[in-house]
Amino acid sequence: MKIIVFSDSHGNSRVINRVLSMHADTSGYAIHLGDGAYDFLAIAPLYKNLRFAAVAGNCDRASSMTAPTELLLSIDNFRLSLCHGHKYGVKFGTARLIKYAADAGADIALFGHTHKAYEAFIPDAGGGRPIRLFNPGAAVAGSFGLIEIKDGSMLMSHGVI
Image (cartoon, rainbow, N blue to C red; front, side):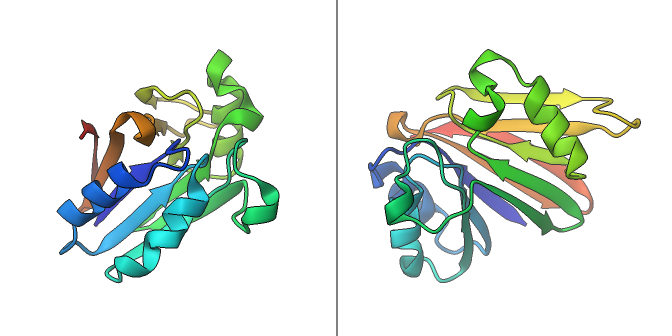
Protein backbone atom coordinates (compact mmCIF):
# COMPACT_ATOMS: atom_id res chain seq x y z
CA MET A 1 0.00 0.00 0.00
CA LYS A 2 1.38 3.39 -0.98
CA ILE A 3 0.43 6.58 0.87
CA ILE A 4 1.42 9.91 -0.68
CA VAL A 5 1.49 12.69 1.92
CA PHE A 6 1.36 16.47 1.45
CA SER A 7 1.02 19.48 3.70
CA ASP A 8 1.22 23.24 3.45
CA SER A 9 0.59 23.70 -0.27
CA HIS A 10 -0.99 27.11 0.42
CA GLY A 11 -3.01 27.21 -2.79
CA ASN A 12 -0.24 25.90 -5.05
CA SER A 13 -1.36 22.52 -6.35
CA ARG A 14 1.37 22.28 -9.02
CA VAL A 15 3.63 20.06 -6.90
CA ILE A 16 0.70 17.92 -5.80
CA ASN A 17 -0.38 17.36 -9.40
CA ARG A 18 3.17 16.49 -10.49
CA VAL A 19 3.69 13.98 -7.68
CA LEU A 20 0.26 12.39 -8.10
CA SER A 21 0.74 12.10 -11.86
CA MET A 22 4.03 10.26 -11.21
CA HIS A 23 2.00 7.74 -9.20
CA ALA A 24 -1.03 7.69 -11.52
CA ASP A 25 -0.99 3.90 -11.81
CA THR A 26 -0.74 3.42 -8.04
CA SER A 27 -3.63 2.47 -5.86
CA GLY A 28 -3.49 3.69 -2.31
CA TYR A 29 -4.03 6.93 -0.46
CA ALA A 30 -3.27 10.59 -0.97
CA ILE A 31 -3.30 12.63 2.23
CA HIS A 32 -3.11 16.38 2.84
CA LEU A 33 -2.33 17.66 6.32
CA GLY A 34 -3.73 21.16 6.02
CA ASP A 35 -3.06 24.66 4.71
CA GLY A 36 -4.15 23.97 1.16
CA ALA A 37 -6.48 21.04 1.72
CA TYR A 38 -9.25 22.70 -0.29
CA ASP A 39 -7.17 22.75 -3.50
CA PHE A 40 -6.05 19.19 -2.81
CA LEU A 41 -9.61 17.92 -2.50
CA ALA A 42 -10.60 19.83 -5.65
CA ILE A 43 -8.19 17.75 -7.78
CA ALA A 44 -9.22 14.42 -6.22
CA PRO A 45 -11.60 13.51 -9.08
CA LEU A 46 -8.62 13.46 -11.47
CA TYR A 47 -7.07 10.51 -9.62
CA LYS A 48 -9.78 7.87 -9.30
CA ASN A 49 -7.39 5.10 -8.22
CA LEU A 50 -6.43 6.95 -5.01
CA ARG A 51 -8.46 7.46 -1.86
CA PHE A 52 -8.16 11.04 -0.65
CA ALA A 53 -8.17 12.23 2.96
CA ALA A 54 -7.47 15.71 4.30
CA VAL A 55 -7.52 17.74 7.48
CA ALA A 56 -7.81 21.50 7.77
CA GLY A 57 -4.93 23.67 8.93
CA ASN A 58 -4.78 27.09 10.53
CA CYS A 59 -4.76 28.81 7.11
CA ASP A 60 -7.69 26.83 5.68
CA ARG A 61 -10.76 29.02 5.89
CA ALA A 62 -13.59 27.27 7.68
CA SER A 63 -16.12 28.73 5.24
CA SER A 64 -14.48 27.02 2.25
CA MET A 65 -13.98 23.54 3.70
CA THR A 66 -15.70 20.71 5.42
CA ALA A 67 -12.49 18.86 6.30
CA PRO A 68 -12.03 18.00 9.98
CA THR A 69 -9.06 19.31 11.95
CA GLU A 70 -8.14 15.77 13.03
CA LEU A 71 -8.71 12.36 11.51
CA LEU A 72 -7.84 8.77 12.41
CA LEU A 73 -7.37 6.26 9.57
CA SER A 74 -6.75 2.52 9.68
CA ILE A 75 -4.66 1.35 6.74
CA ASP A 76 -3.27 -2.19 6.50
CA ASN A 77 -3.39 -2.75 10.27
CA PHE A 78 -1.70 0.58 11.06
CA ARG A 79 -3.57 3.44 12.74
CA LEU A 80 -2.63 6.88 11.40
CA SER A 81 -3.53 10.09 13.19
CA LEU A 82 -3.74 13.09 10.88
CA CYS A 83 -3.62 16.70 12.03
CA HIS A 84 -2.05 19.93 10.85
CA GLY A 85 -0.16 20.34 14.11
CA HIS A 86 -0.89 23.95 15.02
CA LYS A 87 -3.26 22.90 17.83
CA TYR A 88 -0.42 20.87 19.37
CA GLY A 89 2.31 23.52 19.12
CA VAL A 90 4.54 21.44 16.84
CA LYS A 91 6.72 24.45 16.03
CA PHE A 92 7.87 24.30 19.66
CA GLY A 93 8.15 20.52 20.13
CA THR A 94 6.24 17.30 19.64
CA ALA A 95 5.30 16.28 23.21
CA ARG A 96 1.65 17.38 22.89
CA LEU A 97 1.35 15.74 19.46
CA ILE A 98 2.77 12.48 20.82
CA LYS A 99 0.26 12.50 23.68
CA TYR A 100 -2.66 13.17 21.32
CA ALA A 101 -1.60 10.38 18.94
CA ALA A 102 -0.87 7.90 21.73
CA ASP A 103 -4.24 8.63 23.37
CA ALA A 104 -5.88 7.98 19.98
CA GLY A 105 -4.09 4.62 19.72
CA ALA A 106 -2.15 5.70 16.63
CA ASP A 107 0.93 3.94 15.32
CA ILE A 108 1.89 6.94 13.18
CA ALA A 109 1.28 10.66 13.77
CA LEU A 110 1.20 12.62 10.51
CA PHE A 111 1.44 16.40 10.82
CA GLY A 112 2.49 19.54 8.98
CA HIS A 113 2.59 23.24 9.95
CA THR A 114 6.36 23.58 10.42
CA HIS A 115 7.19 23.50 6.68
CA LYS A 116 10.08 21.17 7.57
CA ALA A 117 10.35 17.50 6.62
CA TYR A 118 10.67 15.42 9.77
CA GLU A 119 10.64 11.79 10.82
CA ALA A 120 11.14 10.24 14.25
CA PHE A 121 10.58 6.97 16.06
CA ILE A 122 9.48 7.19 19.69
CA PRO A 123 10.07 3.77 21.30
CA ASP A 124 7.68 4.41 24.21
CA ALA A 125 4.93 6.97 23.66
CA GLY A 126 3.13 5.75 26.76
CA GLY A 127 2.14 2.31 27.95
CA GLY A 128 5.12 0.77 26.19
CA ARG A 129 3.68 1.53 22.74
CA PRO A 130 5.97 2.98 20.09
CA ILE A 131 4.86 5.72 17.72
CA ARG A 132 6.30 7.17 14.54
CA LEU A 133 6.14 10.89 13.73
CA PHE A 134 6.13 12.05 10.12
CA ASN A 135 5.96 15.51 8.56
CA PRO A 136 6.21 15.66 4.75
CA GLY A 137 7.47 19.25 4.70
CA ALA A 138 5.85 22.03 2.66
CA ALA A 139 4.40 21.18 -0.75
CA VAL A 140 4.63 24.87 -1.64
CA ALA A 141 8.43 24.35 -1.53
CA GLY A 142 8.25 21.08 -3.51
CA SER A 143 8.34 18.68 -0.55
CA PHE A 144 6.18 15.57 -0.10
CA GLY A 145 6.25 12.27 1.75
CA LEU A 146 5.81 8.64 0.80
CA ILE A 147 4.82 5.84 3.13
CA GLU A 148 4.88 2.29 1.83
CA ILE A 149 3.33 -0.54 3.82
CA LYS A 150 4.00 -4.13 2.85
CA ASP A 151 3.77 -7.36 4.83
CA GLY A 152 3.39 -5.51 8.14
CA SER A 153 6.47 -3.34 7.57
CA MET A 154 6.62 0.35 6.82
CA LEU A 155 9.03 2.53 4.87
CA MET A 156 8.72 6.30 5.23
CA SER A 157 10.61 8.66 2.94
CA HIS A 158 10.71 12.29 1.85
CA GLY A 159 10.95 13.67 -1.65
CA VAL A 160 11.42 17.04 -3.31
CA ILE A 161 10.23 17.84 -6.80
